[in-house]
Image 1 (cartoon, rainbow, N blue to C red):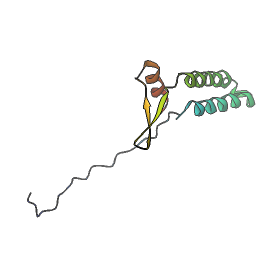
Image 2: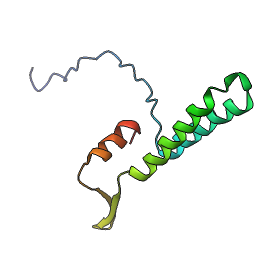
Image 3: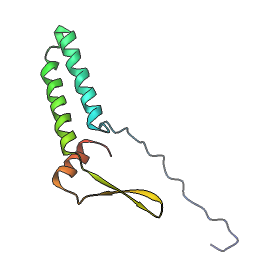
Image 4: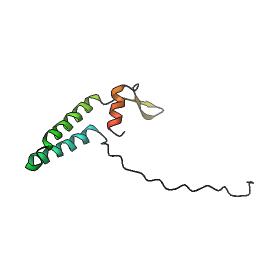
Length: 99
């Protein structure tokens, strides 16, 4: 290829992007759990959903307590967020929630 020839790029096949089903925060998980619980309470034939909704609400509460903390600092006039060292609970949180 010489300098006078335009660069040619191979077109790749378009990739299929699947949506991530994980909730973004414990609050979203709590809303999902509340919806499951309410469906079980309101519709009697779905009563099995009541304990499942309560379990989802409990997981959301524990996740809220275990979420990793960030430290906000300013550097050269810009706000930056610093994460702590990765811990087992932080990795578990990021496995459950998209971040």
